[in-house]
Image (tube, rainbow, N blue to C red; front, top):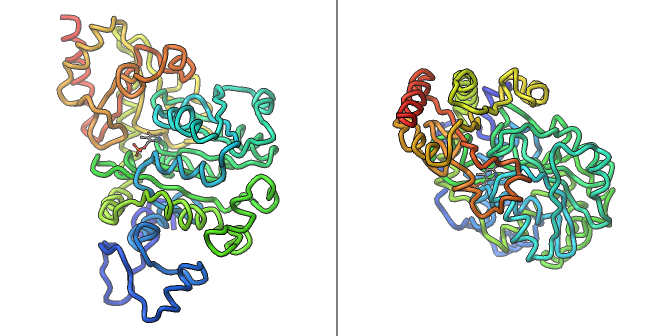
Length: 425
Ligand SMILES: *Cc1c(COP(=O)(O)O)cnc(C)c1O
């Protein structure tokens, strides 16, 4: 199946007389005929559902659609993108371990790695995504367990050189985790470029309509945990909480997702509600159609902004003038996403006046959605960061993150124009 077809059909094949739409299994629990059958589930001897804190059939259908879209072999849904990134890393890192992350990542992930996981004894080194392979190599330590980056960075919309990072990560025997939220598997499939694990905030384009917070983790199945057994004892030595099973031996390529489900979900409980998974699936059905429309609209808006004398700068990698255009052509040959960023030739007060004057585009925390919206990261999502950290993350104080929706492109441009006029009035 091609991507467009997978969006509609992957993950669920109803049999004769079964519902055409993905059923919502609104049940916390599942019935078994014998005590033995139930016991075998708890020993991970049989696979099956027993309690929705760990797994639910609706979620699994939707997760397997996302796995198919990303070209992975297994996936799981989580309650949020934050939970997805936390689980993705925590599944292979424990106290005393270290990871390397791009500094140009979503503010929430930056805090998760730099503050909260630090308290758990997991240390993170942030590196400039433009770092050379040689300098990146110097950041590895004996306890480094993974490398993390975002395909298209939120909010700076730079393109991450996945292949460069994958090569160095693999040379050091660790997996590369890529947050593919902005590109979605429609515009970029990181696994093709060497990513081992892919994460998503499904809250964004995948849901696409600002209705449900959610996340997903996809495993490529390509990383050989047993080959690096000393680094990943959680996957390669007995799990005492499951009678001593060794995930990498018992589950092979499914080890990573099985461990995250049966251990992290069991203990930390961040499952996505099946009802939300159902809404997510509706979003996924039109994902390919929407992404192409988002990209076309964003390019039109970017061109308008680039030509506007009140605009100081525009970043959108689909613009030929953008320094990341070559990277974009490589990783996202059919377009990047609908999000762009720009700064105005204006001071802070004027910028605020511009934002407040927009009528169609709304000021919201959200991004990557059907309706055009915008945000000023320095005073909103990234306000916990110091000037220094903002600079490291590449977030200019005047940066406006503009998420181009599916409205008529000319309507969006007209709205921008009247707000620029109002700003100067
Ligand atoms: C929003 C976002 C997250 C966090 O996801 P939530 O669903 O809000 O928890 C993580 N990564 C990126 C790139 C995001 O845009």
